[in-house]
Amino acid sequence: MKRSLMSFDCKEPEKYSKKHKTFFDNRIWMNSKEAAEYLRISVNCLRIRVLRKQIKAHKLCSRLMFLKSDLDECIRPIE
Image (cartoon, rainbow, N blue to C red; front, side):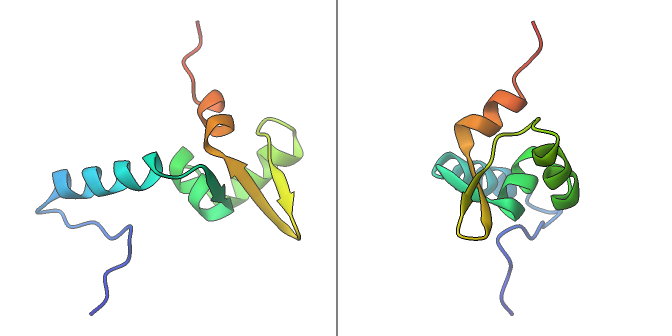
């Protein structure tokens, strides 16, 4: 049985968090699904925030793509 990248095994949370962290650390560009997962919001919520210009997105053909650095700016702590 194939395990998806984001499958979670309750017995090994450390293994999951390490795999999850390294996956996003190596990414520069993310699609909508990956960006939503990174921000821990739904894809629909992500698209709404793009329409409201709260999150910067780039169009590649008909797809929305996100720079990890732009997403990091959205989640930085308020000073």
